[in-house]
Image 1 (cartoon, rainbow, N blue to C red):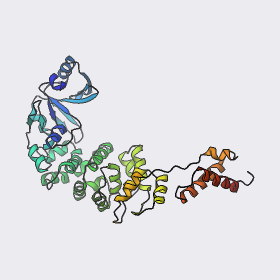
Image 2 (image 1 turned 120 degrees about the horizontal axis):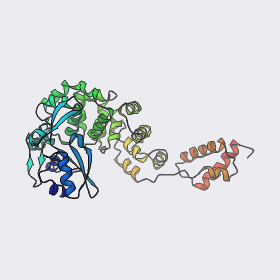
Image 3 (image 1 turned 90 degrees about the horizontal axis):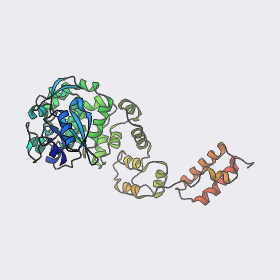
Image 4 (image 1 turned 90 degrees about the vertical axis):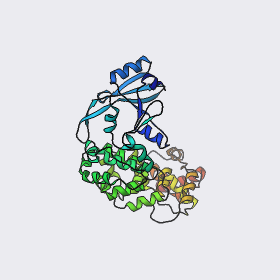
Amino acid sequence: MQLWAALPTARAVGGAVRDAAANYPISDVDLAVPLSPDIVIQQLTAKGIRTIPTGIHHGTITALIQGSHFEITSLRQDVETDGRHAVIALTDDWYLDAKRRDFTINAMSMDRSGRVFDYFGGLDDLTAGTIRFVGDAEQRIREDFLRILRYFRFFARYGREKPDPVALRAIAANLDGIQDLSAERVWSEIKRILAAPDPSRAVELMVRTNVLHRLLPECRNPAKFARAIARGMPPDPLARFMALIDCPAEPIADRLHFSDKERKYCAAIRHAPDLPADATDAELRVALADHDRVALVAKTYLVEDDDDRTSLRTRLAQASEPVFPLKGRDALALGAGPGPIIGAALAAVRSWWLAQGCLPDIVACRTHLKAELSRLDPTN
């Protein structure tokens, strides 16, 4: 690896080491190094590697190699924290750097030869499926209250045993800190929790610790979420979010600063029809003509009855999406003048087309349009 050739004392840290040990796919490789950022830049530049000072005030630079980005951070120790931000000082002590990290499974590092440095029992915790804070749990949380949500994110993905009682007590004692977190950070962590293969135990634990109520007081029916997961709802965070709430998503979207795309998708799921498990082909065509296919499939996990909709989901995925064959130009070609009559006539014909199961072709629709235009404007 080019980076290790330029920085032989560097180690992979955090998620890359954790996921390698757990035999999970590795998405990003972050490195730490016992060198100051200016020396890191000098050594990388000498090897022809381009760098960007993305977070140089916090000891982080980004190296660019063949279109890939690698974060490299100088070893640090916390000097002062306020629950959201930290004043740091550089160090060359790997133990001190590991000591400031959140969980034991995230505090490991690995050198270029593959040797793992594990100061706090992270490998054993990873094997056991235990999520433990490094050192004093309350202190770790007070350094950054987002670690409360990160606890549930890692529990959702790696937790297998009963939750660490020390961690739960520390979370309960610091719940008020959640209110100081930015909406963007909260929503980012909620999505990551919901994206776990099976987040049901983590969400149940969030209910039990009152964390979920603090974040989403609108979540008044967690059993609905549990049913959706039990039905095999895929790891779509927004669809799973809609399973968590029993109200329109708009007020929550405002509070947590959803993107426009997220708002539209949540609305599409909410307004999608509850198709019965034995829906006819005509019902599927009508639904697909008026609603997003992905939202329709997501909605099948949220219905209240116990019917198996596995076959329905397959049919929805495979069915062709019908397209209404007429445009405004078809009305003009039939002699209609520009104006509201065209819109009214097309809407009437489309309603008829939907009632026919979306089967009438363009010839039949034009015939119906001609009759509709004559009805709306007998002088035409």
